[in-house]
Length: 509
Image (cartoon, rainbow, N blue to C red; front, side, top):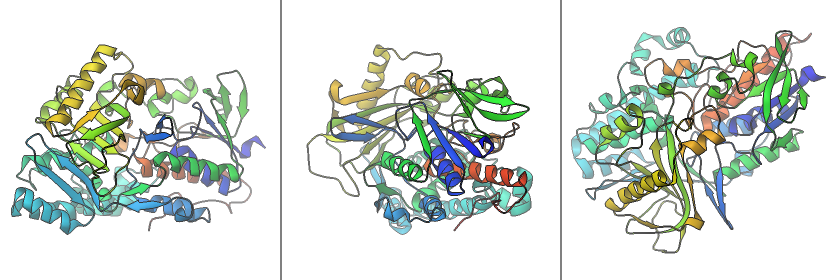
């Protein structure tokens, strides 16, 4: 029966998580993906036999995937080999200074003490304790709640806990209370960019990202994209049908509820329920039909999250002891974000992230070409600004020049380099302008403006990094499970028996 059939639009982590959860409850699930394979933003570039992750590169919040696999009667470790990192990241500045952060908090505190003095080491301990407090307060009533509201957060946590999450103070201002060294303010301010936001506009609540990372960072054997391949294989073995290279043109609405989807080739797929994991901006702009567009508000350009300029390459790197994750900071952080967020243009000197995918906890003396993913933040203007070759060349010169000022020299070749601009990201993820994280987290109410799993249109559910609880691999997986749980609960509430109903919230360890 079509009422028991579910169409999932998108085979990213959110779509795969939803499909696995729904199939485990016996539903007939079809996943429709416009690209040639699974992964969504978890993409990879391929140069011969060298594969480079060119989307998310950090695996955190392992408990999310442990729970997902447990619910399927599986063990994560039986499918994916994970290696924990002792060194979370190496950080460098143009003055030649370097600082490593470690999975062990006291090791990090000692390193900060040697780097900036005892006072900032104590500041780091206080910062870490407060970041954990914020995460603990928000985990149950917000992060794992399908449709959080400020009233329910107050009811569950109380006014004192609400103040503890510091929603009314910017992250940058809060950091000044912990660290006197401006380099440390810059380092910990960077966690706002994990949500595609500026530390000068995002709330201090985003301190929780620092706790998430310090709680564990893992390397995925085979790369991050391998996780998507494993999950899609598990879904297929449970009866989920996948249609790749197939584009949905419209969510079909009949008698006031969804009844399936129309494909770009003119075909129709009947279904009683649709889980849409595309960016909310694409839905709001009408790319899935007028009826579906009415279910969510549009995202103005000024509210978009950051985009990026990226270079995926096999290249020779010398002069700097790269670890798996290394960050090279610009000399003027405020000017950098004034350019990106305020003037909507690339900065003169960017902060640069380098993921050396043949490295782990320690640098290597091996000078042979290695797999590198290089990223600089950019404005989400890809829907109205074409990055011409001359502009790309200038951005490349500024980015690689910034790395050289920090001591890292990278030698690439055009045939082993793939450059991705905000224009390219907008083409891959239409309606976004190239924004990679949905709505930015600027302002204390921004997190409550992300839509939850249920929509105003019966039978249509949302998941993905632009929906609640937000961007990032584990958050997308959570959103997929939330959409599936909401769908199953709604299906049970209209059935003669309610025995299959699932609780609305997500379980936590």
